[in-house]
Image (cartoon, rainbow, N blue to C red):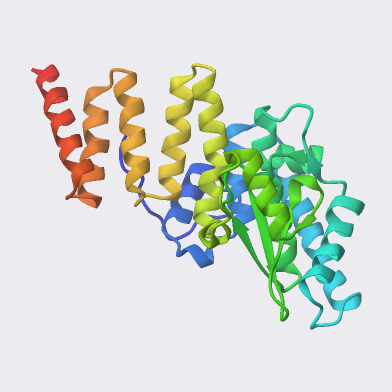
Length: 289
């Protein structure tokens, strides 16, 4: 595994991995979240019609912009905006969580999600964020434990939505109940659990669904390829370099593992984790001689 080369830009129809390299060089705020997710989906499903998926995204954006301009006052509060968005995406377009085949890889592929109108919370969340931002509203992803959410900000304050459940609006008791179901009765709803998540982190969460499913199926080579694509998006993610090195190590690719670990140490040169990794690397180098 070599470090992905950064590129300043890539044309929409370029090789998708070249596009991911370009995304990796962008500031987080400049990443077109949905378009980037399409590039990931092209790699996962090279025969899928990504141009049709991009056309659907454009149509959704146009409809969301018209909705905001013609149906709602500029100062509409969060619940009103959320209800209108749910009417558009869950109602008119029919987007919903896939409760029948949740773990199917198609649910993490945005091209397939746009075609089937079914998906995982994070894939659906990307569609909802795309529409909300096209409407001119501030919208953020929330990296909630085990269940991606989104938040719409309005003059009266934010409102949190469960897009997997059709855009259900969640107040504090509902969020606490969800957290208890995930983490147990002692779970506390801390403010940091509702902090906005950047575009790059959302893409990594989406791609990680594919990586973990490939690992669960014993497809180490597929998981490693997915990890490489994640590094193209986030070339400065120290944890990801270490995790990719571990995958190389599991495949007995010692040289590649060492290069990944060296990259981790260039990003995290000090601390207990760096010291442990140096000891592991010494053992690996001994195997090369």
